[in-house]
Every structure is written in C-alpha cells, then in structure tokens.
Length: 142
Image (cartoon, rainbow, N blue to C red; front, top):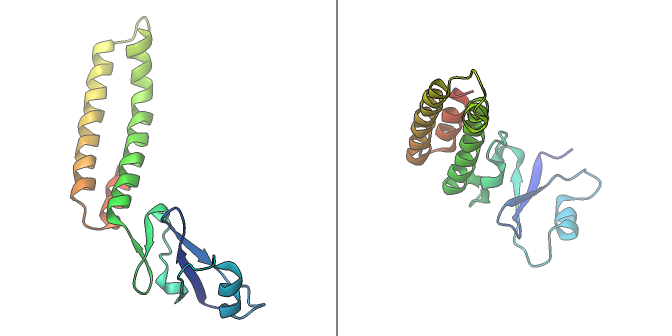
C-alpha cells in the first residue's frame, strides 16, 4: 500500500483525502475519484495530521493539510459549550424544578463556579495561536 494520499478542497470547504488501495496508480485514482476540474495534490501520508481532533478545520496548504485556526476556535467553543452544559445539568435541575430539600443557593454558587471556569477556557481559546493550545485547554478540563 502506498504512503501517498490525494487531497483536495471539497465543496464544503474541508479537505477530502483519498487513500489509494494500490490496484491503480495514484494518478489513475486521482483521475477517477477527484471531481472534475478540482485541483488536488499528491502528498505523503505524513503531511496529513494524524490527530483528527480538529478534522473539520482542515484546509489545503501549499504542500500539506493545515488547520484553519478560526475554524479550530469555533470547534473549541462548541466543545467548551457542550462540556459546560454537561456540568450545568445537575444544578439546572435544582434551579428549574425547584426540587424540595435541594439548596438552590448552593446550586447557583456551583453554577457560577462553572461559569467562571469556562470563561477562563474561553479566553484561552480566543488567545490561542495554535490548535494544540485549544485542545490542551479543553482536555485539561476533563
């Protein structure tokens, strides 16, 4: 099996990757599978990130697959909001359902601590200059 891959920018703005099986030459695979008129590159497998955490933020670079940092930040914020919502759930029930015997004040204090923690993560994401900084901020929270 070849160590080469065919990459091209797809219609949704992401990067499509074709992995040849070896039955055809890589040029034949490109002619068969890349949409007509779409530019493509033949790259080494090593030129494609092995970490797919920000897969939806991949774009075609000059020689390889690169990350669109703004898209990485959007993905990071989406994940941050999902994590925060999960942490809020038990306290949301106390606040919204006014469960007898549950301390609504304590629940609201816990919610504020969660808000504060995620505000810091939001700041790290906004100030990040690499996808790894975003990922580290999100994973440190888990």
